[in-house]
Length: 151
Image (cartoon, rainbow, N blue to C red; front, side, top):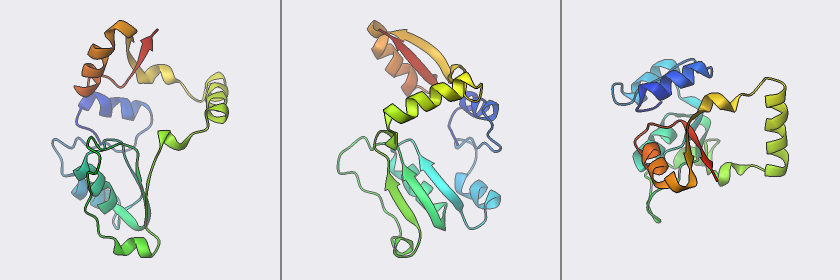
């Protein structure tokens, strides 16, 4: 799910089976049609309150909602139906992706060496450190999938 067609096209290239442009389609209706009862796992990368709430709403009553995106304002609240949390539905935040760099980075390198992971296709732009502000602006405009910053 994204706002930008070029990002959705990249998702297909990386193996996505379904894509939704949320500027043209009702995400909730499409997800409900694809997965009646809700999805097993919904991940929000935006930090936008309405998107976080939607991720929770489209999650199955026994599913997991994972919040990766960080809200812009400290203290920003969400409105969710909490009753399912008393049973088996879960919602959790992710701090830095929850990774252990000493384990995960060597693992990603091994997967890349085996040809099972290619980060190059994700990197669409490269900037120097002096260009950090234009890099951030390009990311905010949705022009960048991932970028590198050359030190």
